[in-house]
Image (cartoon, rainbow, N blue to C red; front, side):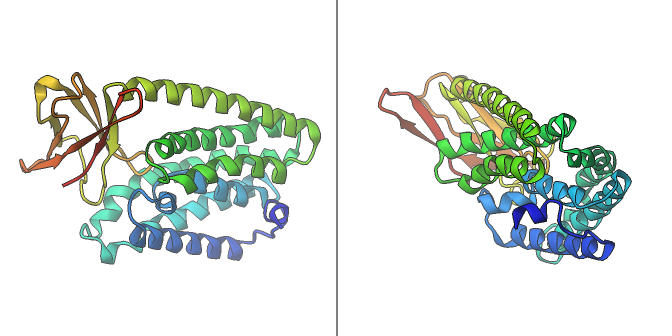
Length: 296
């Protein structure tokens, strides 16, 4: 059944358009109904599911140009619908579409050459394995980030972690059928996993020694470069603000000198209103501190 999905579907224009409409509407409803920070809601703001869906379109096309055109149209229809479905129910109104969709439009443009190249994974040879490995590495990178968050706050992002990591062997087995291409793709995937785990957890251990980072709910805090952040006790460390987008959300990174003193964070909007993020300090068996932040 899964192998038939990845290469056994007749991807007519009618099928493609219906698939795009369904993908956009379902994703928009997920963004509306599922709370922020939940694994299922990630499909509305991050890449992992769209990588798999794009590959599904590509491998069910007969020629490279057909794959490029149909993948482009798929994203051209589905991505606007994600936001247009939300417009009547969001406080930003049509501004939601105007603010978030342009970023995805740039990626939509990139799908045309990307799908033209990606179609060659149908060759089922060493070149196909290398091309497929680009998508696999992206899934592994995203999955490792979710794994880090899962370890910090279980079971948050459990489904996202399983989806990213589980998609890697699924794509290898469903798209590549010969032994050597599978071995090449698997070897590259294992190497990518080792590198991502090393980099993520080395950086994570350094950041958690006297601080942490936490994400911001974009529906509550529509952060721009005009927003400011600081510690309630500025002599105890620093706080920096990362302004994100639909793929990587906005976040605050905190570095604390003395975990016994206040680590509360204050976020200031362009109107001068302060938003307090109180810190809760939790220590492990060795006395090492971890900071968890609530939101006002």
